[in-house]
Length: 360
Image 1: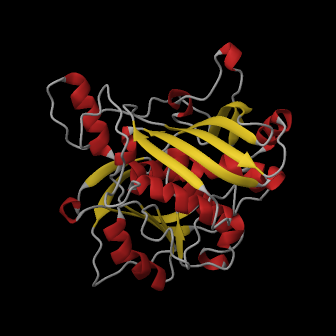
Image 2: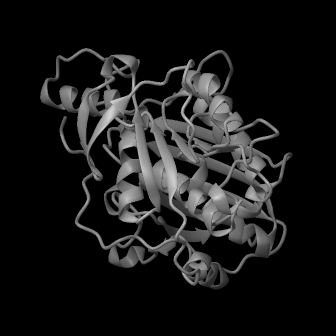
């Protein structure tokens, strides 16, 4: 499988600022990663290792036919295990990155046996009992929860990270978003499809309804409604995380021939007059955001710049439709902050606040 990250060697990514002063926690956890051989699951393992997450036992799970296979991980060679309903494992923490059906079947099985479950699929995201969390935005939603935690969609996370601090200052009224989403958002099959099509112009579409090489596909996700599944997720999840159930959100999701990194063109209207200078100050002080906004020097976010980073890159900041309107551009690594890193940060917050393991 070709390497797809397109990232340079990095220093260990910092957590969000309010965790940096917390003393080292000695509690060691029994951790499981479901879907460990997929793009997101394997990245969860990498991020856990990078951030020195306190693990006593680590169990990795994949499809039944892979049971017993030893694979290389950041934690050395590990044996893939099979999820068996007759012998559900007892764990403190489970990262689930295996899709809706696995989440439906196994989420509550783990939770009922005492585990905190952080699930990346869409299955739990809009359920009233499952907090939908971006730690830099709404960590308070985790307080008191010891069951199912939902990890938002990979476009929702960067969007709310940019909008939340602006909403606190100017009060958001409506949003229009166009997302340009990389093929890795569809997993390994999407990456392999792009590689194959770039290599051979006669290759038939496989992971997508049309060829993705040299193309853009303005539909991502389920059918049956005027909006796509990906657009629906972006609208509903943004409302839930920001606590604005009636917020007007207009979304168009487009698949583009980029390996890693989602980008969003955002146009927002606020109740108060905006100040571009103040907005830049807000972003420069916001945890998890890198301000990159000097277009006159060709400095602005791109997927290549975002790849391998845990931060959300924000730039192209400008007025739009008068004194209350704002336009900006966002790029982020959809596999790291858009999925794996956000999940690990959720676990770090819960651990620091004694919401997980023996300390709870």
